[in-house]
Every structure is written in structure tokens, then in C-alpha cells.
Image (cartoon, rainbow, N blue to C red; front, side):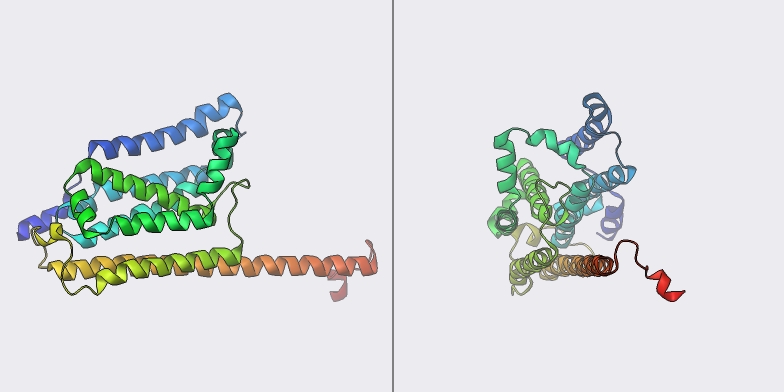
Length: 289
């Protein structure tokens, strides 16, 4: 068993469907920002930073679904499955959104029905409810255990999680004025609510007195981790990982909000100063001469 535990860190494998989906995602993106952009005049250029950001999101998905994390998650450890979910729902989606220019999505929303559907789907109340319902549902023991034994069901679970995660991150990271982000205070409140929802789900798992997932109870043990300890570690990964991420973004948003308010205050002060002294009045620099 010790040889098995050591070799697991070098095993990379992925389901054909996952690899195909990842290749299609990156391929369609590169097609859109390259040949299609030039052919249909969607934009004069694409920022390399956006391509790098989107590609980083795809790489995160690739690592989550093919690396030793995936092997451990599907065969041995609940904790690795939770790390996989952190990557798929909290790390990759915002990178995908930030890396997608608005002009690439705009043609898809030209039909009125498509735009109306997108507005509903990206409404913060809808995104919050959809993601947390999906996330909680798939962690019910019966459904969770079943998904690990049926390949297409597990693939569907991950696809649904990633899709709703993209939606839940939209009000924070949107690049489209037509489907805008929340204002700064609401962004912070939204992320705080997300962290609370995560605590509720994984608090129940953390404080369970016995293992609740039969799949991992019956799985071979690696590194001497008991099923209950593995379950508690997994729940803590989701709670602490998600909590640290949400808190970090809240702090970042707070300072962006503060800086924007300071900029507005200075602009108002300069406008007021200019109106009192005329357009040709003394400047601030003149006061120090």
C-alpha cells in the first residue's frame, strides 16, 4: 500500500469526454479570438493578457480532471475530491470570464430571446440560488456515491458545477456592460453570502460523527487517513479554501471601492475649485511655487 500511495502522485489520467470537452473549450476560444475575430471584424485586436487568463482557467480545469488530484479523488480520498471542486468552481470560472472579451459574446446575444435569457441567468439572485442548490444537491450521500460509480453521471456533475459556477461568478467578474457586475458594496455582500452558504453545507459534513459517504468508506486507505478524518479534511478544504478566497476578494473590492470614491471626491473638489476661480485660475501646483 505504501508503494501505491507513493506512485499516486505520478499518475495522470482523464476520461475521454473530459479531454474532448477541455480541447473544445480552448479550441473554440482560440477560433473566436483569432480567425473569426478577423473574418467578421469583431475587434481590431485581442489583449494577450486575456488569452493568458482564459488559458489559465482551462489549465486549471485540465489539472483538476486529469492530474493525480483526479486519480485520488475518484478512487481514494474525499479530501482530494473537495480540492478538485475548489479548482473547478472557485478558481477556473472567474479566470474564464475575465479572459473572455465582451465582443466575443455579444454576437451570441443579438437575438432578443438570447439576451433576455442571459439577463435572467446572470441575475445575482438566480446565480446564487442555482449554484448553491446544485452544490448542495450533489453532496447528498446517495447522489454523491452514485455519481462516483457511473462515469457519465460524474461528468454531468462536473459540467453542471462548472456551468453554475461561471454564472455565480458573473456578477463579480463580468466583462460585458450589457450584463454588468454588481456595484462594489453589493459585490462584497454577495461574496459574504456565498461564504455563509458554503459554511452551512460543509459545516454539516465537518461535524458529522461518522463517515457519510459509503464510496470512501469502502475505498482503499492511503497514507493512514481514516474515512472520518478524510471527510473532515475535505470539508475544511472547502470551507477554509473558499473562505480565504472570498475574504481576499472582498478586501480587494473594498480597496477598489475606496479608491474609486477617493477619485470621485478629488474630481468633485477640482471641479468646484475650477468653477470658483475660472478655467484659467491658479492650479494646485501654483500654490507651492
